[in-house]
Image (cartoon, rainbow, N blue to C red; front, side, top):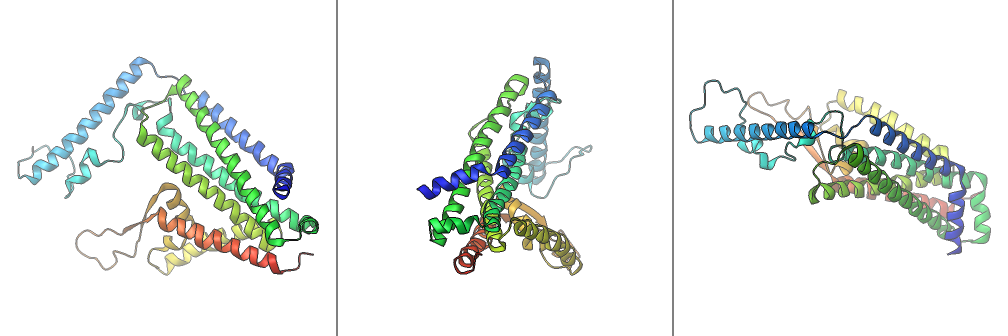
Length: 338
C-alpha cells in the first residue's frame, strides 16, 4: 500500500502530467466558449418551422416506402414518378433507419446536444488517448532514464511488483482523470444546450448509445496508456514510445497502405491498426474492397465489408496491449537496469 501511495504522489508531481491536464482544461474551455458564442436558444417560430420540416421529411420517406411496396404488388405508378426505388423495399422502410428526422436537424446556428454530443465525445476521447499514451510513456521512461527505478528497487527489491505497481497506478490515475473530465465535459455542454441552445429529444436509446461510446472510449484510453508504458519500458526512454508510433504511422499506415494498393491486396484495411481503432470506437466500420469486383462483369457487385468491435477488441487488447505488456515485464525482469 505504501508503494502505491508513493507512486501516486510521484505521478501527480510530474510536471508533464500537470501540463497535459492544463492543456485538457484549456481545450475544454476553448471548445465550450466557442460553442456558447456560436449558438442561440431557438424561438418558438424556429422550433415550429423545424418541426414542420421534420414531419414533411418523414412523410416523404413513408410515401417513398409505400410506392416501393405498391410496385412489388404490381400496382401502377404515376408517370411523373421521380423517386429511385431499390429492389429491396426494406432499404426505404423508415422503421429500419438508424434515426428518423427530428426538429433538431433543421435548426441553424443552434447547438443541439443530441446531435453534437457524439462528435464532442469522440473529440474528448481522442485527446484522452493522446493523454494516456504520453503520460504512460513519460511516467516509466523518465524513471528508467534517470535511475529512479533503480533507487526504488533498493527500497522494494521486487522488480515485477514495482513495475506492476507503476502500471496499476498509471491506469488508475488515467481512468480517474478520464471519468471526471468526461462527466464535466458532458454536463457543461448539456447546460449550454439548456441556456443557449436546444437539448433535443433524449431517450433511453440515446443515453445507452452515448454510454456505449463512452465505455469503449475509456477502454481505448487505458489500452493506449498501457501500450505507451510497455513500449517505453522496453526502450528505456520516453522517446522510444514516440519513435515507435511515428515509425509505425509513416512506414505502415502510410507507406504500407500505398504498397498494398499497388499490389492490389484484398481488404488492405484489415491489416491496419487504425481500422480496428475506428471499429472499436464506432462499434462497426464499413470498408470498400476494390479487388472484390474485378471478375464481375455483369450485374451488381457489393465489394464492401465490415469490421466490428469484437475482432477490434481482440487485436487491440490481446495482440497489441497484452503482447507488448507481457514482453515489457519479461524484459524488465531479466535485464540490467544500470
